[in-house]
Length: 159
Length: 261
Image (cartoon, rainbow over all chains, first blue to last red; front, side, top):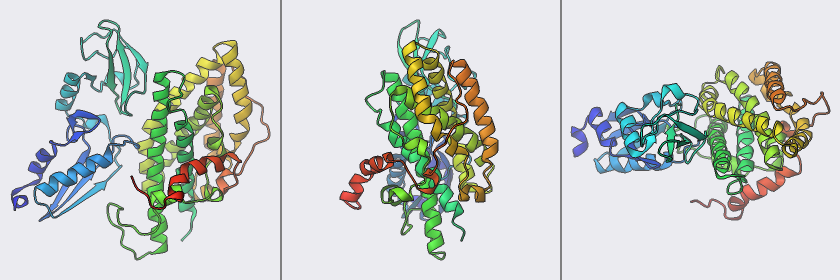
């Protein structure tokens, strides 16, 4: 049974394989969604926290965690959702921020806690950019346009 | 067990659900694409908050009915009430939402003005609720207030843009104030369960009024003098309009009971 040789640290790396279905370049570990893992023999409990209250990806993420852990041989998988302390982009890894930019999404930037003009364009690095809307294609992003390369892009909001 | 906590949680759940449902009617009909996305994002935030409140209410209800029942850590194996049964199978008179949120959308100006009145209130309420002795309500509020901050900013900007915009937009905002003002008194009229929960609505009213005056001044809009205020929603006495929303919202579950995605 594979699960017998697995410790908590290894489990976190297995869960790296699970991506956010709405930002598929980020793993749920990069995002800081997995808060803790508790192992008892062939049982495992995973504590996850939603990014936004209404994040529709949470059910899918929970299902994928179940599948991943069942594949590793765990007999019982419990997913517990916690909301306190509330999720924050401070929990996003540096690796996650790098991957976001490479994917074309500007990473959370402390200088823009309130979205405003000037967030660095992830495509051409210009800071001559314009906030189009504080809301975008998912709850976690704002919509921008770059005045230099003219491309629209998303900014992952500080939260 | 005293039912105040259950009733108060249902009041918060119903209010956010109904406003979410109303705003979602704009999906595909917003004035421009970015604003269509904005209003539906707000709708989604409210739905998420509503689910948190309903899940908690269901837990409380089931616990009070079967105090020895097993409560699973995930909340998944509870018998009886669920977030779905509370949203889909209660009748008009059982809904405790604010009247303000059940009103028809009207035009864009009326929709953004309602969001402004509500979000300003919700922000101040969540500030207080974060300090609640009830840990779960405090946690939901602490999470949701980050979202509400965006709703306050967005709706304030729109009230200013339309109030201080063209003659047409200004007239429409005056009309929206006429339609909505009389439903704002209910925000601050405490129901028994709010008093029992120790919510200080008088403190919220004072701050809310200051915020509204500041934004209306910038929007060149008049703040109405105190006038007659319509009450009832918190006690389950609603306008005619709630029945129509519930009919649409609950249709599937009532026609095909226990249907699932």
